[in-house]
Image (tube, rainbow, N blue to C red; front, side, top):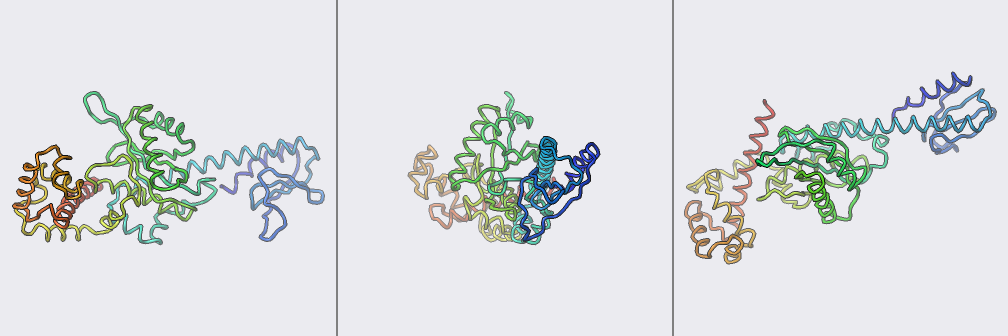
Length: 373
């Protein structure tokens, strides 16, 4: 909290009542305190009032009147509360700004930052003062994205306030503020209270998105980072929230809720530089007659169906609503053109990685192009 917040109310009260005051610091090991703001005690002929856990004011010449002391206590409490709210709002705005900035950086740069504690602290720029967030010490950051559709199907951004009202009604005191994104889709950052485990978090966020869709009439998606137990964890909490949002693009279908740590192997994929991705693609496709970008859509559907069925062809045919022989014909065409038989785990895994990495490289290329505009 701003250490100067008490000077203005004390100045005006001293002018009105004719007393003098001096600010004192409560030294380590002192028998004084800690006191709540507005607590009074007497030292000799002076009255003292607590300003925070470390400071108090000594008043000389103050009339010994309980009503005056109560009124001054109330004024200081109001000033302290207003200052704390302003500082909380300032902290929240800075964290939301940092979220937007990290959201537009390349994933490899973010992963490198996550593995560099000193660099991460420097990038955070000291936004960790406990007094700025009050009780918000434990929990997770949640990045919410939303849009709604016209009857024509066009996606449009919707205002923040109606959505904030719905979110705060479902989980009070969680809304931190809006986050600017390069894509133009509306987004906001939430501070979510501690949960039992990831399953509990996913359930709560899924319920929230259902309420948002029903009451605010918007389609929303959410990502959540690792949990924070104290102020030193907040930079990692925000960075992993951003990385969790990017992890969704590695998946065959974009989930509405995705949490950091839900699929740890994606953290490994994100850590690889694009040069390694390209090297893998070159090696994996050296004998293929078809680049991944030229695959027919039915090949991707077939691959995803086989993986979803744990390589069981009959089960995959059922999931894809295909005759078994039709599916076998597709599998054979893929083998002929790429050299990989997706009924084998290793071959199916290679083609899944080829598909996922190709998609990631296209996303990174688009993100880089936007950043240079």
